Image (cartoon, rainbow, N blue to C red):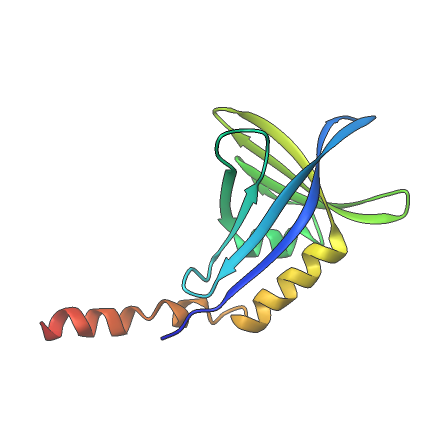
Amino acid sequence: MRHTVVERELELKLVLSPERSVPVPAKLRYRSDDPYAVHITFHINSDRPVRWTFARELLVEGVFRPCGHGDVRVWPTKVSGRGLVLMALSSPDGDALLEAPAAAVSAWLERTLRVVPPGSEFDMLRIDDGLAELLAQ
């Protein structure tokens, strides 16, 4: 079975203080063969890009209301009339607060939801097919 990939390049902002932020090029990625997850790659000035993976459902909900706890928290806000999605990421290496344009994130999420509608993620895993193949050997 062929899998679908939905990607979107966009510029996020790393919030350093209420008055200061720096642009961070990023790529949002969704794969139908990993239907529960979204992948974000941040291109920062380092040898390797920084990658985060978390539940698509968390990002979908975070566009509308605060959600998440622990390593990933997402919530909507408005700044100067612009809709934004804030993502707070925590790791042993440090914490980051990133802001993304809500319209771009929402449009990308809508594309992922057309590829794999909510509630149909398990069907995309094709576990039964994999078990049948293993048992046939």
